[in-house]
Structures are given as structure tokens and as C-alpha cells.
Length: 105
Figure 1 (cartoon, rainbow, N blue to C red):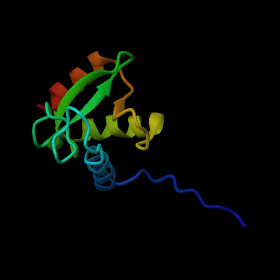
Figure 2: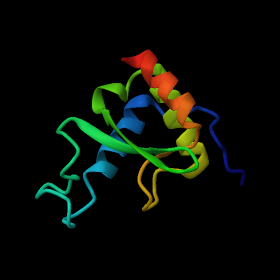
Figure 3: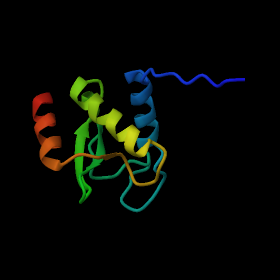
Figure 4: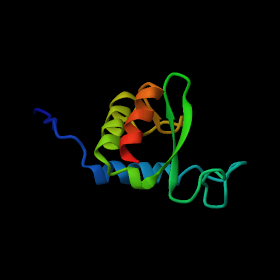
């Protein structure tokens, strides 16, 4: 019996749901509000870590469906997956991330 593997990439809405679920599952820790979100992250935003130094960026949720950001998310999923405790990490240079996000703004 052969196992069939699909070459289709996950749909953007599936990726978005995974990210939102991940962002809301932090739990109550010091520096987090009662909803489990970091206190310094405004409502409607989430945190990503970029580059070798894992520089922290706060980005709006409205960027999730944007094609350039979707590309970054697909790279992150291929590299790290979405099931780890390190936060959402984007494996690209900070300069590249800042350039791509400037296109979204």
C-alpha cells in the first residue's frame, strides 16, 4: 500500500488559523495579559523573530494574507514548522524582512 503525498501548499487561511492559534496559546506568564498575549503587543498584532539574532518585530495581523508575507510564512514553515516553543521565526536576513514588509506598508 503506497502513501500518497500531496505537493500542494497549504491554503493561506489554514496557515493564518495556525498562526492565530499559536499566538493565543501562550498561557498566563509574567509580561502577558489575561488573554495570554504579550503586554507590549497591541491588539491586532503578533510577534515574529527574524534573522540569526532573532530580532523581535511586532507586525499587524492584517499582513497575514498579503502575498509577500505569505511567502515568508511558507519559508518559515518549511524551515521550522509551526509547532515549536521558540515563537514564529522567519528565516531570512533582517534587511530582506524589512524590505519585504516595506512593500506591504
